[in-house]
Amino acid sequence: MLGLKLPTDPRWVRLVETNIEEILTDHAFCEQKAATNAITIVVQYPEYTDLVDAMLELAKEELTHFQQVHEKIKKRGWSLGRERKDEYVNELASFMRKGHRRNIVLVDKLLFGAMIEARSCERFKVLSENIKDEDLKIFYRDLMISEANHYTLFIGFARKYSGGEDVDKRWQEFLDFEAGVIAKYGKKETVHG
Image (cartoon, rainbow, N blue to C red):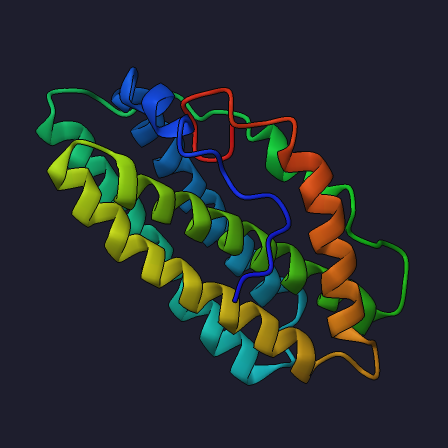
């Protein structure tokens, strides 16, 4: 369904298990950034009422996820660390077209969101199937489903507001670009690292 070209090596989970505190802190800030991205779309495209409504709901859900991850951190006796840079997301952002017609920029913003949700969904699936921690196994299974829904939401709005742009073609370009980006990662105990 997601169409990702390069799957995550399940051995990445062994790395994650060496530093659960790091993956949880990184994950919390991924949720915060996802909420911020949804709010940014609201601010930049207020004329699309259904998109605004959906992004506001998404932002609330992402903040709920942030809170859930924060609770996992506290439950383990840790505190939320400082925000981490997400080099994967920054590299992916460089692929978005800027300075084009408004609908083209919106399509790329939505596909950018879809790509991050797709990769997060895939990573959460790998975690849910391979992590030894039973609590996190269930947690990441539930979040995997949520991320898949977010991916679908972004793709749907990209198609709706494409203005004639070939969204399927552009999505394939995103998938190809993302494969080159993600190939450099999977070596750190972070969601995209």
